[in-house]
Amino acid sequence: MIRKATEADLVRIAEIAVFVKRVNYRRIFCDDEFSFNQLTVVDTINTQRAFLDDIWVYESDRIVKAYIHICDGEIKELYTDHFFQGEGIGAELISYAINQESADRLWVLEKNSRAIAFYETNGFKMTGERKLWNDTGQYVVKMAR
Image (cartoon, rainbow, N blue to C red; front, side):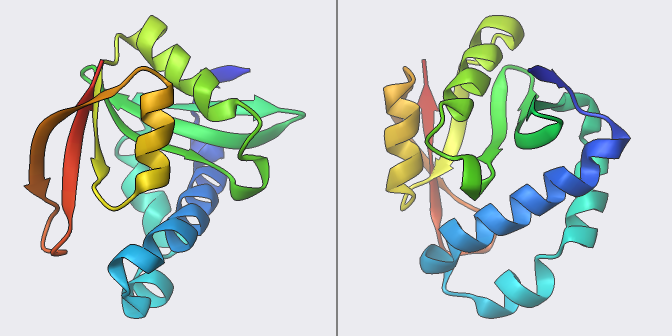
């Protein structure tokens, strides 16, 4: 079931975000200081709290397995817990975002080929736009439907 996130979901949302970011981004950024000292569940809870009105969770068997952050038609984040990836949960969240929230664009790390392939499978295409992401030295690319 996809539902609006609540305050009670913040710990689980943060757990998912931190673990998936460590697994997927450590190889891209090569920054253990950030991955293991700065990227924390507590800090992520505080960050996500500010966006709670724009977050939906995928819950099954009373377990939040994934979440999506959508704002003004843009998918800001989509993370599925590592243990539940490959079960179609991300595709369900994408479908929800498109059909219920009119999401039609997103930015993804240029080196995150797995995410790019996932979004392409779900109807998004590269637009040719790219920009430096914060002060990381890495680029994000825009994808749209």
